Each structure stands twice: as structure tokens, then as C-alpha cells.
Image (cartoon, rainbow, N blue to C red):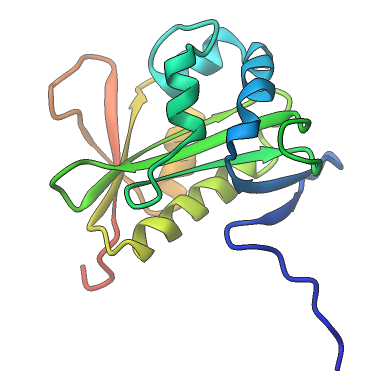
Length: 183
């Protein structure tokens, strides 16, 4: 009987149309230094569009929080070179976190400009949706700038609906996906 080469949970080789081959996997503490170094690869507009703020570097506190997620309430995935954690360049990061006391989670995805438009965002979003369903959540949502057409189109293509931002924040939309299959 042939032995199958199985990957650990949440691991997947992603082959982009450009020829880049990346490993999508859960973040590890060793990814901290490469992630901080790679943060400069993300343009200021990418960071603002995806994280809704203008920052030029990851603070030590933010980096600690990203690289040490609480497995019960959040998932953080990276798309990186298929090398050992700590040495691999990180080209994308996707995170979902359950809001305390609710059955919903907020997502955020940040992809390097060198990898945009190759299907990586779609694959990361699918994994976040799968995680949310596995946690029996009711809803997955993300706040998106109204002018961020690529994220709005990606989310809509996966069934997310655009709704007004709950705080009425000008320029922001909330993209929501109901995860309960009975709805």
C-alpha cells in the first residue's frame, strides 16, 4: 500500500499562476522576525486598505499577538516560502478572531503587492471560512474601505454581503458571511 505524503492540518501548497509556490500554514513564533522584515514589502496603500490604518512597521506587541494566537478563539495563517519557519519570507497573512461573548469572528487579510491577483486571497479567505464553520460560528465579517474594490469583489464572490458599518463610519463597509448552513 502506497504511503501518502500528508501535510499537517491547515497546511497547503499554493501554486500561483506566476509560478510562485507558497506554503499556506498556521503562523509560528519563529515567523516573527521574517514577518517584521517582510512588512516593508507591503505598500502603504495595501496596509491601509487591509488593516484600515497607516503603519510602516509591526510593533513588538502586535507581532507577539500575531505569532502567538489563542487557538480557541483565533487563527492566523501565513503564505510563505516553503522553508523552515524563521527563515521563510512571508508574503501574506490572514487572521480571524472570535469576538468575546459572541458567535462571530472578524477577519483581516494582507497580501504583498507581488502576490496580489493570483488567487491567494481567495484561498486564504476560504480557509478562514472553513475555520469559522468548524468553530460553529454564526458569522464572519471584515471591515473594508469602500474604495477597496478587489476585497469587496473577492468577498462578494464567496457569498459575503456588504452592509453599512455598524458605527456608521464614513468610507467603511462591513462584509458579512452568514456561516449557519440553515440560513
